[in-house]
Image 1 (cartoon, protein in one colour):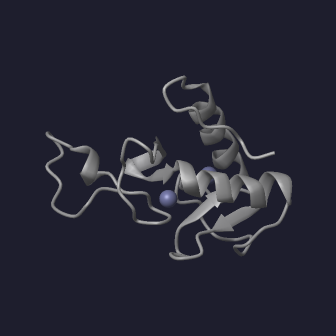
Image 2 (cartoon, rainbow, N blue to C red):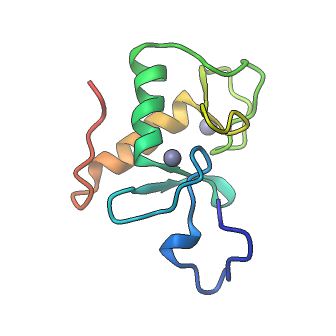
Amino acid sequence: MRRPGTDENNVQMSDVMCDFCRREWTDTRHMVEGHQGSCICSECLTVSFRILAIEKRATAPADSKCTLCLENRPAPLWASTHHPEAIACLRCVKQSAAVLQKDPDYNWRKPE
Ligand SMILES: [Zn+2]
Ligand SMILES: [Zn+2]
């Protein structure tokens, strides 16, 4: 998400906030973008990946809409602990994890 009042022609790192924890994009907190400016940070990705892909648990009702792809998929969904209206589907979490892990600058690894 963008910080309210962000100049779309001149977006700064601090204007980009994770939809799931509302913290800013920094050199150590990486962001993966979803649709319409939605973002998930590396820390939330670690948490959601662990819950959805490893523990195979869902923490959001099955009929919720994913904040990242804006779709209502029949997939396990994760709701942010701090902002439960922010929801991520397994597919987005896996895709975002693959994107982040591929980037050599980030040194992020999927949780085991
Ligand atoms: Zn986050
Ligand atoms: Zn999704």
